[in-house]
Length: 309
Image: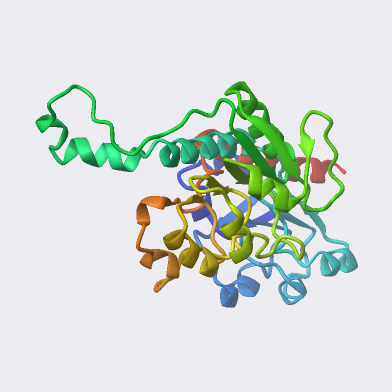
């Protein structure tokens, strides 16, 4: 099989040598929209993470048989065009669950525990001048007895819920599709979830029902001191609205995903007056070493299985 990997840079330092066992491999670190058609012209298999494979790209690759999305989300593929042309599309599900769940709690504790403040306090030399052994600055709370609302109770959301319950939190959830039912946790409306939750975490896909799901009114509904975490998709939280509300209401927000990635400047979230209330990471929740290794191994396995059909 002639295999073309279009955006290898997205896998970091993860070894791609295993692809050599299933075909002749051409690797590109990044591929722009203008370069895609030419690069896949002779491909039988395309491996992509975020590079868009549309009808025109498929038209340029007459030998194309398989598109491997080295990710879970497949919104960068024109599925109708692939079906018309008899091209199989395969993704990888579940590879990053543990990593995303871990990062969810990492973000929460960073914000809830005011880690930035206390780290900077010590390193500034202020602690050395204290009269007593402990500096009591911004107060933090325990999770026990708090309400944790989850938006999107899929595999990742359920895993977060299970761990939150171990910490003693009371978990409720909102199904963005309306179809998710889980007897273990209370199902509620979005409005009630936002009003009642001390922690809100988003683990939902971006679609017509979730775009700007959390905007001005929802942010204003949040409890003072509540924490909002988005580890689903950028675009679910209205970034323009957030840039305004976070300065007038004491809420804490962690974002691992943004509407446009990488972040572009100028950006309203880079100009907030209370940056201590905002924690942004560059879409890294899925990128543990183990998760990337599972992703590549599963993508190779998808190619192997296709060859056996």
